[in-house]
Image (cartoon, rainbow over the protein chains, first blue to last red):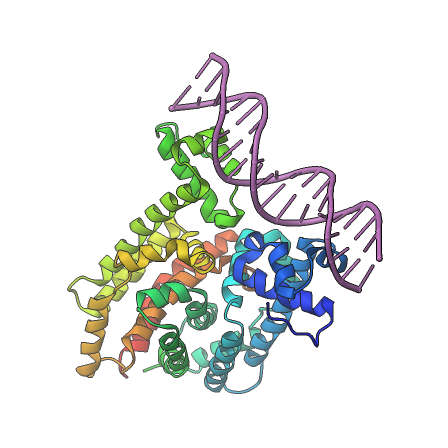
Length: 204
Length: 204
DNA sequence: GTCTATATAGGGATAGAC
DNA sequence: GTCTATCCCTATATAGAC
């Protein structure tokens, strides 16, 4: 019931829907939960967004379009790759801390309802880290980086950032950490990752 | 409708339930889907496993208890850590190729229904890679490994293996690969990862 | 044990008053 | 535009015949 009375109902519903969908997934979310979260009644949801599916589309669209361009943007600048990686990890982590449910949410919806979602990714050129892949190739050719498939490297960087958010409950249980300790763990991970990744890519 | 007529109904139901739950998640799964997948009628599901929840518990229990001990087992042997990591990645990847839906499944259920599941992890000592963490510490003290938090390192190793399975649809779309190409990508990742991880941990 | 038929509840969606 | 009341379908679960 995070009521933000400055917002108009349409935005208020969208905010509530974002919260509920991201926590429970499409199948687990109830329209009644969203209405309650928004502090209005269920009929209004349908008044503004005809159906659950349409409402979900709106939420997912905004989530993806605000998140992914920011990610790729960092990778597609002209700076040297080492510097970009450091910058990327710092900024991406800050973004993930703001939207901790996003990774799990996107992964799950993409797996369970690919038909409903695939268009976003294929149409919007959201995940084409071409500049970065080219840069890596140049680094390999000049002998500074370990020779490897740049796509593998790209997947690794994303994996190392995203996984602690998507798998938070498991890791937290496994490592027996409180919420506070886990937060610290995430914060420390920024520095750790920069070191680990650069070590893995630079030639000895 | 993967009918395996050698199995008795109870096992057949469990197999079908495993398939459907892992693909759709608890909330997305329908008891009727499971019945159809098992090639029997819906009433029998309830005859053998009173409720959807109980059936899910049975599936999740088996999935977790067959998977996690195997993982940790590899890490808790007495071999040198470098060798173990190589062995771990090879074996873990083979396991993941067998059960590609497991990572996403476990992550999502853990996030959306923690109360139903948390006990498995806390009670069964499934994820305590203590031997491995201790070994890493020794390597740091002897000056062979880059000094870092072994827990961070552990999370990284799991992340690098698991992520390409959990996020398959996204990565596949992003890198524009066919199923066949993605399979190849995963296969090549084994060799790549061993190199990348050892590079990241060993001192220059 | 296995089936068909059915009870019961829950959730998405609509009607219609205000 | 916002509400209450309600429709209707779907999904879990049970009853009861065989």
